[in-house]
Amino acid sequence: MARAARLMPGGVSSPVRAFGGVGGEPFVVSSGAGARIRDVDGREYIDYVMSWGALALGHAAPAVLDAVECALRRGTSFGMPTELEADLAEAITARMPHVEMLRFVSSGSEATMSAVRLARAFTGRSAILKFDGCYHGHADGFLVRAGSGIATLGLPDSPGVPQALASLTLVSPFNDAARVREMARIHASSLAAIIVEPVVGNAGFIAPDSAFLPELRAIADETGALLIFDEVMTGFRIAPGGARERFGVVPDLTTLGKVMGGGLPAAAYGGRREIMELVAPAGPVYQAGTLSGNPLAMAAGLATLRALTPALHDRMAARTARLVSGFGESAARAGLPFTADHAGSMWGYFFRSEPVRDFTQARASDTALFRRFYHAALARGVFMAPSPFEAAFVSAAHGDAEIDATLDRLDDALRAAVAS
Ligand code: PMP
View 1 (cartoon, rainbow, N blue to C red):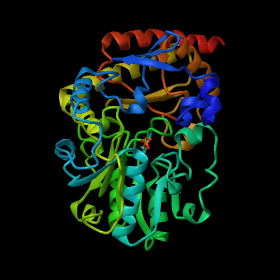
View 2 (cartoon, rainbow, N blue to C red):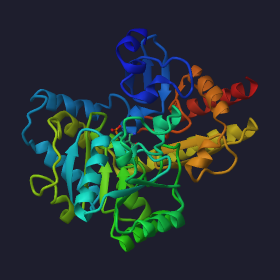
View 3 (cartoon, rainbow, N blue to C red):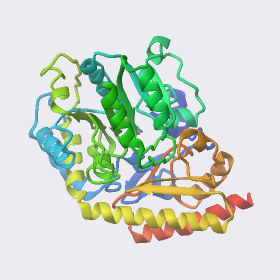
View 4 (cartoon, rainbow, N blue to C red):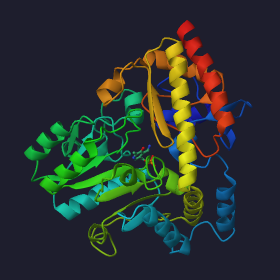
């Protein structure tokens, strides 16, 4: 880390990895296998970060390794179409039929940035509405009340974002449809899109109230704005078909990343055909990428989606449910304020007595207790996101034995956090 810190800001390639939210030094990874990750000093952790949700099948999953190896031997990148892109596009649209067409990119940030450009072009409007604590990547217009690393590091908004751009981003509390309706009414003629994490992962885990997403759909329809589901984290994670399948609400555009790349850099944005046909070269909205649709990433994503059957999703969700409820029982025994929840294999917890509905409530959780608990859990070999404002993930490699071992260690860590 010392060597890295001389050469890279904070010694990391992405901010939250630096442990700024919990203090101390991050570990340096040497390898991962299944549910476990190992550092260069030989310590092993049961991993609930799972590359921030990208690894649905676990580390070094044989199906992914085989697919990538097979693709690798044919060459790593061509800058021309491959069959794998059509294969993965078919696999995605089969699971998400409202994604009628899509464009592959290499990161979630690119997907959301491009989806907003497209929504602006389609509607001829400029403003977007996002939610307090939702993170949609690091494009200028999204760095307004964004959660995740920005919240963890206590950065208000990022310097370098021109005021002119930030002023086009409206922000409402999550789960507050009345506020959205009021803002949408005031800005009706300029609102291009409402963008939302259908289940929030970047302010910690926050589930939508049952009426919230249907209300957003109705407000978008009333104002002519597009509804964008940012499913970079939730896609193929909270249900085989993501938020539409789970909540029955159909967005106009969807952004995807993480799971669909199987742990390699791949992401996508897609949606209704009449909107997607505006993207170059079919239409005039420009967006491009040298490594977009990279064959190794396409192969990894395809192997992952094929393995993620509905039955496997159910098993992962059941294990996640057991983890969340066992963790809650331990917290209750330790006499701690605690709330936890999950959607499929995505989960999260706060040290707060009441369920969390928005980012204000998330911030009101006991973050000092979180930091003490965090280090106690890490010392016992459980690796979770080093921030109270991040979600956690169970993979297909987390079997009952891993869940049991985790529950034992977390129970012990909670008692240690109380004592310290
Ligand atoms: N949207 C959401 C909902 C995310 O969780 C993330 C990343 N955590 C992004 C967008 C940005 O994706 P990437 O880090 O791949 O740019």
